Length: 620
Image (cartoon, rainbow, N blue to C red):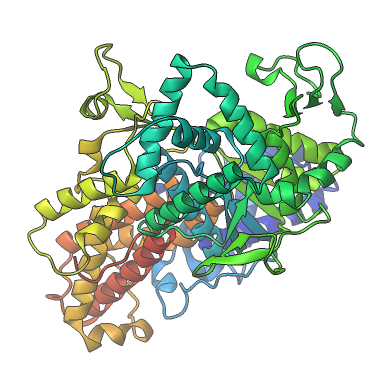
């Protein structure tokens, strides 16, 4: 990619300057390549001269001029730029030779297969009720990150962690055993949605039921009792419903890791013995945590109150906390626990941990990415702290938490669900305990109805497929840390910065190429050089060139919105190009070049859509 050519060429010259100066190169001096905000300042800009000025005791302008002269004689870089200028206090501005870039074969990029293996854990919904739109945001983010990293050359293994020993499942089991619930439900998860809300109301009226929850938790962990089997049946039925829901949004997994497997296979026992060798893990003998095994904070000074408490891993009654099992799970993820799971098929291409299964080479990652909302920052920090305490600093550094803002409901949407909005707040949180939220299946149904009502033609993709794409893009196009205030009316829009807009742009490109027929198929090897371009041609070709580096940056930053922003801008630029530059009505070399540009747009947008998990339709 062009950025890499600039970096490698400038880096080589910078290294020569340091060698000539006889000085040691400071660690902070790193070549940085940016895209200027205004095209008159070039296609790329480098500030290396300004970073070198002080340590080399030279003016940045003279350093920039020297770098420029060397670059103009660099055989690897010179053909790609028709001009390199120095500007301002010491910038180097690069103007790409787009005629050279568009030459047959010159602009193709090959993905380099990387050695690293990445485990990405996402979704991980409690198996006690149907999924809601907040869960769906997690799944869309995680699946897109997996697609980005696969496309960038990593070996990727996708996990869905099933918490079948947690409070939420225990609550649903208590509700099934001790409350009455009836009605017409399309799915078992919907029935459990209401049952879960109902038992939480009952706890307030009948506090003695909370003891039942504790008893169920013990039964689930022990296994093989009536209650444990009931919990397993509930969890497995709901997990299968979750998988079917996610499949409609293009979301799939490689492995289901059941929390009960971590306990039954002795993972926690092994982790416990390892942690006992560290100074940060001990059993409290006095105070309110007496009898608990806790992970002591190394340094809580100056931290927020919620992070100052020691983390309990084993309660005084012997019940493991979620974080305890998560630590054991992560030791296995990095291949340092000395134990392994067995697996059984759970579906097409999907394995599930099972004590009666077979061995498979899974886990043992170089990097672990966990997609969990920002409220789980503290438990993730505890896992990282445990790895470091065990001398696994490299693994601790490669544990990456993709934190994101939760989804709440707009006032109008909340009111439509029967929530009291008399306070007039801007947003209202979803609450499983209160049964407040938009179920993912219900959202898909409503969006499908909205798409169907607005379509004038029914050819091409089904309304349901378009609806799923629209929802997925809606949940991806926000910055990760943004709290998404979900508004049903806004989510069902199909114009503006939406997934539907991208699908139409791709279909338009395909339509043009289909009409050109065999002529379009032959242009790849015969595209003419085009020294003088229309401004819209130039804008589009520049955006096409940015795709490889955009993908690389998005994968490095684990940032789906980077791909969303790129795809939307690319689609908008193509639509401007289509409106300003006749394609099929043009002639000669101009026609050939514009068909080539259309073909490159279609192929690039198709890649971007695939990374985002959206379809790339030939017709809408």
